[in-house]
Amino acid sequence: MPDTHVVTNQVPPLENYNPATSPVLTEALIREGGEWGLDEVTELGALSGSMQAQRWGELADVLRREIRLANNDGEIIALQFRLGQLYEQNLRDIDSAIGVYDEILKSDGGHAPTQAALELLFAEGVKQIEIAGILEPLYRITKQ
Image (cartoon, rainbow, N blue to C red; front, side):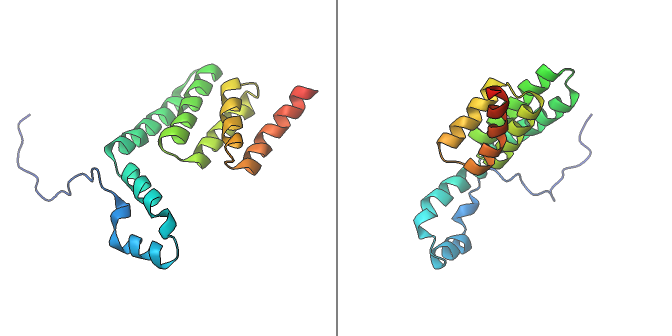
């Protein structure tokens, strides 16, 4: 179908934008004593505004839809685990990753890859109280 007209009043896609380079943010970090984390904030800002991060977000949306459409528990768990890994390793959203891992272990307490992922996060000192709350009951069941 041929174009009927040219659309000119649309905002271009926001691609490869680093929100952490905002002078207002930089000034606020320095003013509030957070200058020590400026490099890390800038790095995270570059990641969050990258096209790759946008694609990872799209992949997360696809995985969530596939989970809803999955036909059996094994398929659901495999998709959930992929989603948890995506949150943890690519999007750096540890809270969401832990939430997905928790869901997996609630439906299959013996899912070794999920348990290993949580144990690794725990060993790295990440969200230890929350992770202990998920893993400890599983250890008690296994011990019995």
